[in-house]
Amino acid sequence: MPDDDPTASTVEGVELRVLLFSVLREIVGTGELRLQLRAPVRGEDVLGRLVAEYPATETYRSVVRLAVNRVYAPLLTELCDGDEVALITPVSGG
Image (tube, rainbow, N blue to C red):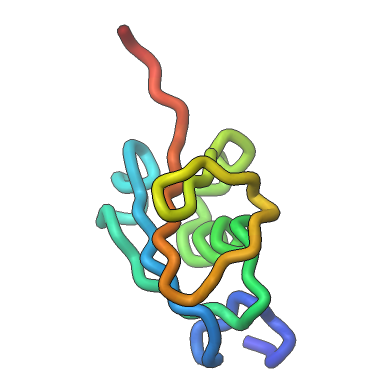
């Protein structure tokens, strides 16, 4: 990956714990990822990295909600080293 790619996995930067639920968990095959991204990092960068590594998640990109440290947050929220990021898809049912 080029050096200017903020989602490159080989650069030092912000390390995040990413929690996945529902269909995202099924696609990725795990409920938790550890990602390292170059700062500054926003929620949308985490989604971009997920889609790059797991293209089947692209279908859900427009409906994913973000929670940072257990509080809903906009996708443009800047993330800090050690943050816990949850990617939440809508759920149907009663």
